[in-house]
Image: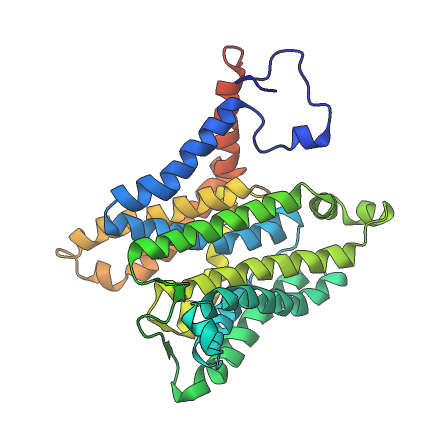
Length: 366
């Protein structure tokens, strides 16, 4: 196990070995290189514009992890995940702006970190409420239930009531210096990126460890055949609701993070299309894979940025292109999903798995 490659005839004898994070020296080297790239190269050597793109990739991946858990690992279709991201964002906002924290909490800069955790819990509980019908329905009917979460939460509760708290109208203004962790005020592109990188790393680690546990195996069993899973003694209602809670918790964390990247919070930040977008991200990235959520986020965000690079120069010749840019993005999104479903139905994560296997099995890759 200490060699770079597992030698022929050496096998894993325990589940802990098979699921270990650091199985070989080569894997350790790759992970260290990845961490150096994420925490040193990207924030210090990329221009501010590309740092903002990287932050958007991370935010998209944070939202997509919850959708991946529900659809890819548990087989529960959701089209309203933006609602739980919105709940997390507004919970964190209200805790930071409206709650009279003790002076020592404010001085130590603990209000925002505490609000992130509470936002995740509140969003998780709210997700469970709309996940209750999953005990009785699935498929098309569950899609309608999760869509109702979007319209009830964002279009009704947040827009008509929560947004009016404090007489602010439709948006909560976040004055400079509001978002801080300890003595560090999150007020630059690099600090926002670091916050995203740390949160996303913890979320990936948490989900990966859950999937390797009894809970994760139960989720996969429910996805593959819920009747067989129930016959084997798995409490499918409990595990389905647990999946909704964890997915909502992740969404709440993503929403709380979004505060650091905006000067004002509005329901317009969480349209229903954002829920569709996250589903498209995991379809392109690959269902049932943490890599899929990350690869899909990278692909969609980068493609849309490249599309903008093409449209903006052309708009000087065809001004209507800039006016219709939102529709062009939607069309590109739909075409990308269709292309992947036809030519790469298993997503980018499957292609990454094939590339890794090619090198791992070389010279016997055939």
